[in-house]
Image 1: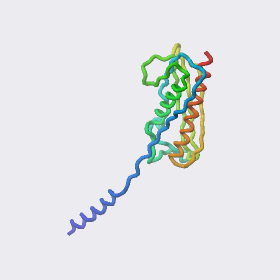
Image 2: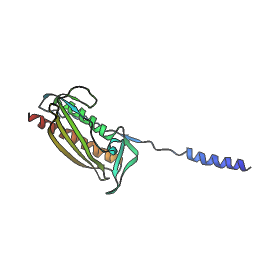
Image 3: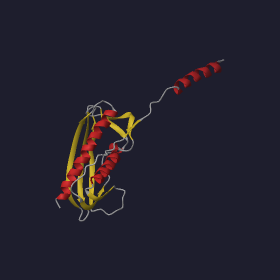
Image 4: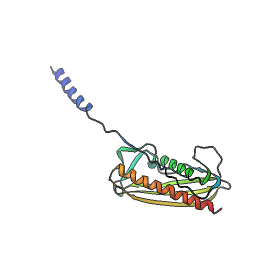
Length: 193
């Protein structure tokens, strides 16, 4: 009888655990498809190097700032790939679509380039009310390994909601502005030749 009662009790406990519904992840992606055509066209090949950043930004987690000292990630929301990889791919695509350079390649290409664009994601945080990105960028001439130009871009965008979706919407606006501003900066930097 004791075994029977324990079996029935175990069955009820296990059935309660298995009937709970687990919330699936919300997976987000940012893809800036806007075209920022430039009147200038340079017969040079640009290679975009891997974006440097903290390990935190090289993950697929969506981070938020809970207080001045505590940063955490949304449990049921994440990026479809690492944030820095998504940012890098958006930059490659935007610069390619601008037709500013003869060709634009990502870091994976073995093609010899005339210019290299190095960048660093200095900071990227969602503090519930707004999203903020600080992005440093440098343009090098391959010949002579000479720094041609550098700039830091800082953006802050209000969030429509206090959740991961609000953060993603803010980051989407920031990335569109960043892509446009990087292309304008590149245009000015290569025009100085």
